[in-house]
Image (cartoon, rainbow, N blue to C red; front, side):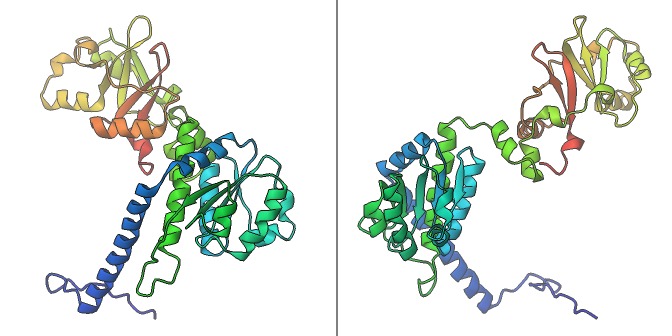
Length: 342
């Protein structure tokens, strides 16, 4: 029989008591996070025109950004390559050792190199430099100093400065790799902003998972056709609800249209429930326009789900009509369809 997992903190007898050893652990962890955070703040203040020069090289690149590094810096390079690719900049990670053993064949003439090395003296990286120069390809270095072999050879050097690694001994790459990651993210995100990279384009590269659903288009998830209820605003409340039976999922709102078919209002099941609670049965034979919400909030079919979520949350509404360019209703976003996305 497997052992029952005990709670980390025993609160059965009152407020939790944290042992001295756990307090020491928390203090050490907080110090590490604070140390790395302060290092990033300091780095942001030291950033100079070299960052802009690196952006210029990447923006003008007609090929791909070839991102490389080894060890922990290589892991950061992989992540930065993935971030660049997902935000509109064609990018590939290339392992420096494999590059020296044949993978240089995948590098095109118009590519730009983005090289990560804190010391700037990593043997595998330094051995690549003359081969890249033979190809007359530009090099962007993310390294501690421009006095290193990599820093001196690069066309552009984004200097990390002298960073003290976190932890009691300051040995494991930690602060330096955090700084590399931050610079890589800044390059990718500022470049995507400069290129006017849109949420819709982002969605093309992220079709799966909750992130993909959040940046999907409203038209891909809205209810339409037989799943929505549309009625003339000249009809009475009774006529609307007697005539509008729909198979399958039933939305919690009726979209009302004027004589030209344009959206003029919204009447929800909550509106109907309030009338019943107030015993306003005599109102059921009056035009629904007297009770509907005039000029309701709307959204376009090409907007992203994230925008719909923000409207629903900020305005505390449960239904959002989807209209075309002529204000004709073509669908409805129901908050129940977005549970799990937001």
